[in-house]
Amino acid sequence: MKTHNKSKNLVGIIMGSKSDWAGTMEFCSDTLKQFGIKHDVRVISAHRTPERLHKFLKEAEKNKMEIIIAAAGMSAHLAGVTAALTTLPVLGVPTESKLKGLDSLLSTVQMPSGIPVGTLAIGKAGAVNAALLAVSILSVRYKKIHLKLKKYRSLFEKKIPKKPY
Image 1 (tube, rainbow, N blue to C red):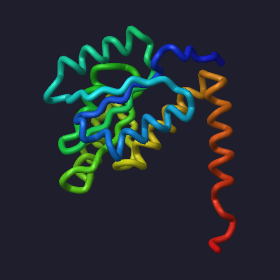
Image 2 (image 1 turned 60 degrees about the vertical axis):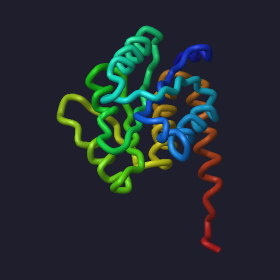
Image 3 (image 1 turned 30 degrees about the horizontal axis):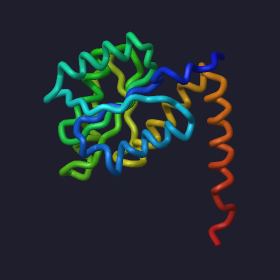
Image 4 (image 1 turned 90 degrees about the vertical axis):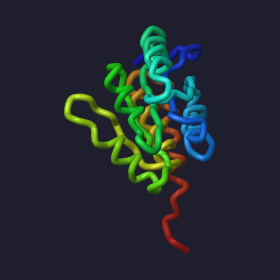
């Protein structure tokens, strides 16, 4: 296992719209911060800013970023397009939308065979779990992250009451 270089961004968080930040993807970022994982956060739309996406992914690969978390609502193609353009692991977070996120979930999870996107739950829970899944993936390679994840899980378990009263 390696110790990770805290000066480089290990994770990229991209979202299709600025409105995906407050109440959703801010929790993804906060979770990564709890583990001391440096990350880059950007607004990038697969449809409206495709050149921005291409540039971001080239920079991510050049700078040895290891995981991309992509959140989008409505047509929600950001995670799929991102996965098609990179071999980095892509975690998709469907965000709330006109159909309460169900349309976003289906757009994110229905990837054809050969281009995988790890899809999480809709909204805040998905954002937090995307960060925790990224932490788990990174913990295989980085000892400090692994130790922090073990501690987090232990503390998490202790928060669960043994009885409902």
